[in-house]
Length: 207
Image (cartoon, rainbow, N blue to C red; front, side):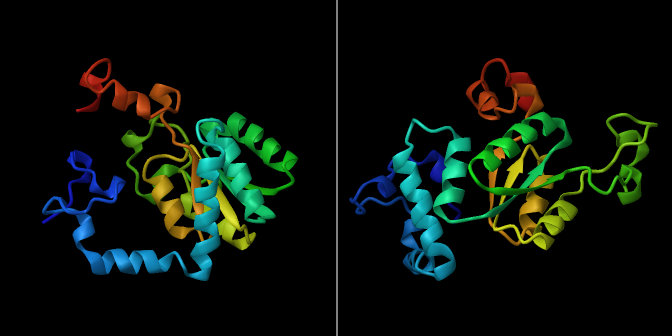
């Protein structure tokens, strides 16, 4: 039986009354829940999780995500952070880089097109390029991750990486990653807009 939290009307996880759990509620798997809870006590998880959770209260409905990200880095004592960004958001990346440095952090930044390899070299058909017939460098999230790993970044920030390319960056990054910007050119990089308008303006553009 699979979980369907997105459609749950009971929300027993939000209170202390656990008598009316849905039949497929994840909380019925006590062994898994206990195992997950125990993991927060591990040295590599505990301080990070507690710090992130405390920031939620400190900046609740006051701090933008950028401020939260900077505060997390500072409170965790990170000195060197990585910034993996999309070429299409290079101006935004420059602003973020500047702000992180002003906060006292050392920033190692790597653009998505690093390597300068044409898309056809990796198996993308010429007619599947954004601009067929032209040189078009592939996004290179694995290289971005490996370059930041080689620079020993303590924490990495993903800024505007493509859907799927971001997944590969997370997979190969040695350091934990947070996403500062989720790329969505159609909505001005605000993916939630399509959700809010799923039955309205975006109705015919999603499914």
